[in-house]
Image 1 (cartoon, rainbow, N blue to C red):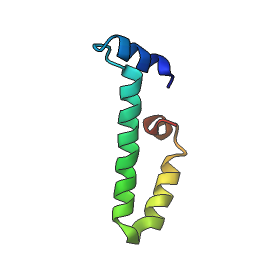
Image 2: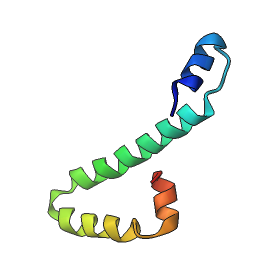
Image 3: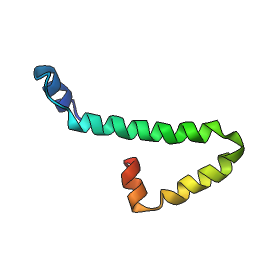
Image 4: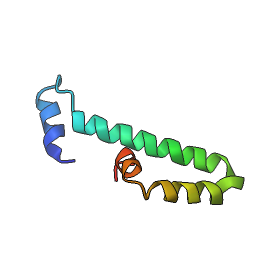
Length: 66
């Protein structure tokens, strides 16, 4: 993300900032997955293996923003 969108939002307070909002939603999604991962310490190995297996799929990479 560039500062262009932030600058535009400063100049035009009504600008919706779609790229910034997309990045925030992606960050919330990633943090949500990691909070679930950290809440179940006994399943760390299993959940981590499942995460890496799913990340091999193109649709999951797109969903997580990679």
